[in-house]
Length: 249
Image (cartoon, rainbow, N blue to C red; front, side, top):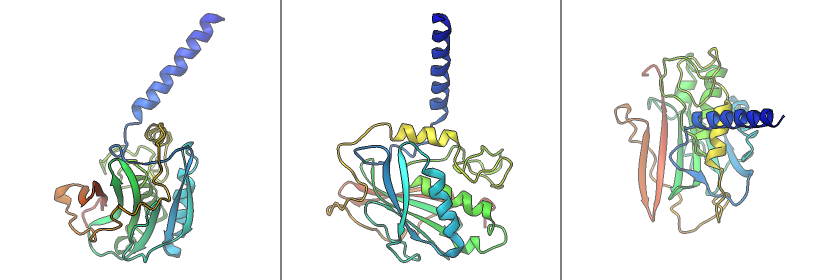
């Protein structure tokens, strides 16, 4: 019996290690500072009726995490400007123009600690037949919200097989398999990102010394990749993650 228990323990440990090894898609070391888990992170609702169900869906998708609870609250900004609010995420939709991007996620970070964040989805594209589908809307909202609490992509090839995760680039979000929701590796990565506690919190805090906003993001270019960093001074940076259209519109 003792040998059986030892073998079972070794098997469980190896499975845990495999899961950890596959979970390697954090966005640098960026995370919300907090003093306990699970922590509650507010998401401001600045989206219209076309997007309400997809914002609700993204919140429901990520809230089963053992370290994070997302809670929808009244929005704090006009959707077109989509200004950040300290201590939470603001989610917005509008016709942002023929920018080449479906969605962007922006975080403001003091060191590695996120202090505020926004998600923007671009109706210039989502009002077209190509992207005006439940699958595209679910994928993009799920992915951009996740960037705002520190996840990056599992894969960045639009044309290979789907991984079954909204953190996977795809040109066919409903698959199969579907890339409309998180998968087990995403939740494993969240547990790694938030596996420690901090001595203070940036969630729903109001540190007056931090710059609140910055000039609108406008320098996006496919040739320059999908991540842009603006130095706001005082040790604060704004980092923008861009999800380009896969078909080059």
